[in-house]
Amino acid sequence: MAFGAEEIIMFGIQAGVRLHGQARQSYVEKTRERELAIPLPGLEHSSTVTQAFAYFKDNIQGKRYVAASERLTELHEMAKAGAQAFESNHPVESKEYVELYKFYRLDDAGTLVSEELLLTDIVALNTVAQWRRGETPHPTAIRRIAGTVTEIGIDFFASGPGAGKLAGNSPTKLLLTEVLRTLDDHSFVSEGLEGAIEKVFIATLDVIQENPAIVSGDPKMQKFVSGTAWGVIDDIQRRIDKLPENQRLLTADRFGEVARSVFRSVVRNSADTVLENPETFLGVQAGGESAMAAKLGKIVLDAVLPEGSTGVDLTAIATGETLDKLVKGALAVLVEHPDLMGIDNPEIEKIVQEVATKLASQTEKIGPDLFPDIARLVLEKTAANLELFWIPDGSGQNLAITAVSSLLSELAREPATGKWKPDLSKSQVLNIVEAALDNLADNPAIVSRVVTGKPALQAGVAAILAGFAEQELDNFSSATAVKIAIRGLKAATESWEMLEHLSGGEGADMLALTAVIDTVFAGVSGGNEKALWRLTQSHVLVAIFNTAFEKLIDYGVTKDSLGKLKAVLDEVRANLEAGGRFWVEGFASDLESRLAA
Image (cartoon, rainbow, N blue to C red; front, top):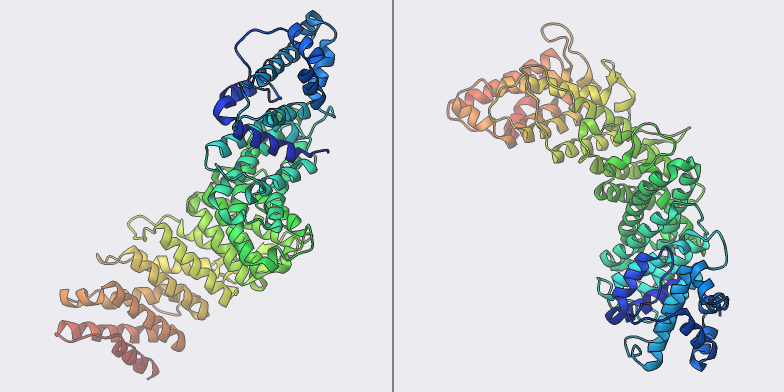
């Protein structure tokens, strides 16, 4: 019976696990000494080619060993040329021949045969060695690293986190077998791929340990994992093949690290989503789950390593967190829009790649630690508003990216000397970004219309910061500023007048949005300590701004309406100075009456 590559490697791993106690150390050392083949453990006493040849030629048990092993048969034929010629012309093979003799002789004596160390295990390891040297002068990448993969598997399942998970037809064994089968079936032959495949195999062991959900025994899930592995390796091979030969070795190692990270992130973050949405991800025709998984892996890999790009190289910020959030964002789009799952549909690739590459170019302004969260937000909001945000003509355009880029550009601008600007934390920036994307869904024109030479959203942020810049309240914090800014951007989204210049008189060069902020602060900051204590509390100040924006949206922002707002605030402040009370409902009612008059 013929065995495939994956079965031979799995046999070797299982055999090595059982040999672990008595022979593993010698086995590992010999593996490292030899370039490609897994040898059998050596012994200490001296033996010769002549003794070995006599044993395998004349001893009944020795003949049986030769008959059972293709590799041993090959070595025995070489030994027929004579001990001196064999040792001179084939020093490595002659040494292996003698080691086999020593090992089998001890087996005859019963020295090595026990419950933990069986002859079948010895044969299994030798089979890996002879198979690797087998039929073709151009073996696949998985065959070239069979010994390394086997050793990694032994480490993991003998005494590592996978101990006890490889017995019988366990789900773990079936999953690994499927991954190895897929990688070998596709016959990757490019030089330099060995490291990438080794790293993907290690990543498979990592995700088995981290997320037991993928080891469910479900054949479709096995296809999904193996398809992801194939997708990233196939993409890596395609990239390596395009490189000049003198660049392949160094570049292949870097590509291999990226392949490992992408594969691990896709599988780890997809498992729960795939299992929760089986009709979308697994409810496809036989084999389709492999194609879909391969596509998802390529989407993320292409986003991290844009082909032919001379701009931003995302590998510099492609941390585990970055990749995880890119994957989750891409999955959010696919869950909401399963029609984009089509294998020949290029839109999902364009969406993810545009988010990754364009936002990555903003990292100097936002910092690399903000990138993954903003990328995830943009993808999730795009998923919820695809028909509004995504313009698929040509290379595609995502309004959400345009909005976020203009917003971040303004937030990153340095304030003028002596002016105040909120010092925003990561979470505060994300809050503003999320609010801006929600506003974009309400009114996409906030990025397409231009105000003072900028997209309306950017002009709105600039107007709000201009209003903040003049304030000197000791109790005015960045946290309060964020809440006011979010409400101000909402007001600008709802009312175009907020982004128009005031007409006539002092302050005619400022936008209405800035004037509202100036007016409110002027109204709350001119009183005594008792009034300031009440009006400058964060929740009170935010409530005043909310009410002011709400009423001015209804009645318009003019010199007259702002004057009425200031007059009501003056009355509120005077009442507090005289020992009176303040409540927002009363302020709202008074402002409504004054504006309606």
